[in-house]
Amino acid sequence: MKICLNGIVTEIEGQYIEAICSKSQQNHDVYIVNGYQVSRNYQLNEGDEVYLIEKGMMPDQEVLEAMMVARHTPGVHSKVKQAKVVVAGLGGLGSHIAVSLARTGVGHLLLVDFDVVEPSNLNRQNYSIKHLGLFKTLALKEQLEDINPFIQVDVKTVRVTEENIKELFEAYDIVCEAFDQAEAKAMLVNTVLTELPHIKVVASSGMAGYESANQIQTYKRMSRLYVCGDLQNEAQVGKGLMAPRVQVCAGHQANMVLRLILGEENA
Image 1 (cartoon, rainbow, N blue to C red):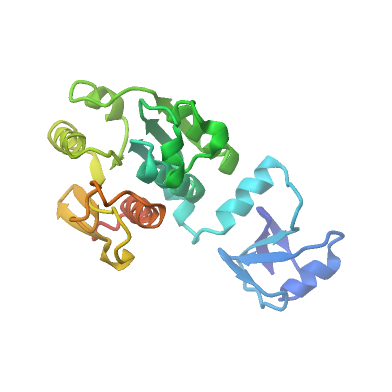
Image 2 (tube, one colour; image 1 turned 90 degrees about the vertical axis):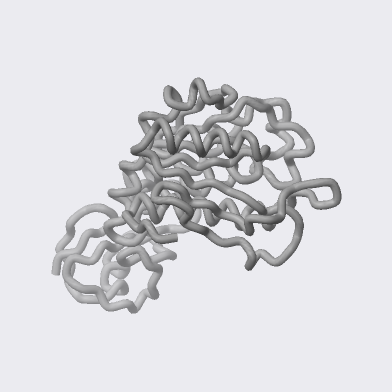
């Protein structure tokens, strides 16, 4: 029987993971078949994609990427690898969106922000004390390269304006809006929808405070516009932005991006 074993087409005897392990000279702790972790006594089928992983060991680059890809549903990674996505604003939403997209394997990310990491960011943004004073673009790029070295991460350390949006974004497929201010959000959404008709926008509205996270949803507002949030709880005096709800909203945005990449256009 032929299977794809750790990225190589291999003829095996027997039908179980156990049979492969018994003939290997290595110790394996994790068994992935077609993107799903299984037990040692799992029965294989012709053409299965199988990865045997030894915990705590660093494989070479080709095998590492193959192992990461193995956790995706078959057929997903090839589409995700070709996608080009902008994350505009790298605060509580954007920093977590970017991390999720990097882990998902989005092949080309553009990170855009003009600000630096400062102490009040640490309550909800994906930065740590060592990043204080660094531009968010550079701090986040460094983190993403540690998470997934097999994607392309570009940065633009600039403020997004009506004048530069077309130049910044026109080579991309999807833009994630992750700004703090309502005026900036509206400017980005309106300008992209008007001037860049090939781009879809995944925006946000309402994730402040500590109300139920179940209020946060994804809505399709127009053919190319999706909005994630509860649409009402804005940050204000007495109602700050806190990590749990911000991250829930970021997850919604990252998941909507993934769905759009895969051709799923319903919210």
